[in-house]
Each structure stands twice: as C-alpha cells, then as structure tokens.
Length: 166
Image (cartoon, rainbow, N blue to C red; front, side, top):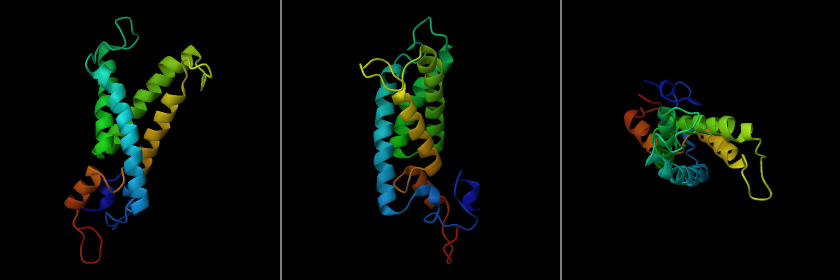
C-alpha cells in the first residue's frame, strides 16, 4: 500500500513517511507545528470545556440551533482541541473545528454586524476567523512529525530497502 492512499495532501506514489510533506519532518517545521497545535488545541479545549458539560443546551433553550448540533459543536471544540494537542486524527479534528467556526461566523458574528476587531472590547469576529484560518492551516499542512498520526503511519508503513513504503 502506498502513502497517497491514506494522506489527504502532498503524498506521492512511492514516498517515504519522512519525505511526505504532510508531516513536516524538518525539525524546525515539526517543532513549530507542534507548538501551533498545542496553542490552538488548548484554546479549543478550554472553549469547549464549559460547553461539553451541557452539550445539548449550552446556547440556551431559545437557540436557533437544534440540540444535536450544539452537542456536535461542543464536542468539536473540546474533543477537537484534545486531538489537535496530541496530533491524533488531526484532519478530522480540524474539519470539526472549521465547521464550528463557520457556524460561529455565519450564525453569530456576521448577522449581528460585529466588527472584525472592536476597539472598545465588545463583541467581534476576529477570534472566530483566526481559529477558522488556523484550523484550515492545520488541515492543509498536517500535524507535523511530532504527532500520533505520524507515529501510526510510520508503524503501519514500513520502508523498503530503497526508502519507499511497502
């Protein structure tokens, strides 16, 4: 089996796990992506922590969103944050967070007319947009070499003598 059958971006037929651009194995890139994942993951973990306790009603009973979607958003933030920290199922975690941030922008910030940044400290959309773009970056560039995803792939695909994967 080849790497391209299991990686969303960047793999070419015959690539080794180490040469796959999705995992950023260069030490500086790997450490940078680890730090980035930890910061974004912790932010989502803490944002989702309060919501996960009341997953189906954290928006209140008059919310225009069904309770099951509230639960998905709470899980995407809480579980997605933990997954990003560990680098486990990273594309799935990033997609959940992307969907949640699109929902936050389209259902809260844009309809309310919140500015990008409010100089008075009021409601604004910049944080949701920063989280959205950060999650897109993680989805596109991968979790880096310091991730559980990388370790799993490395164990599943043993390199042949020529460095390509078996």
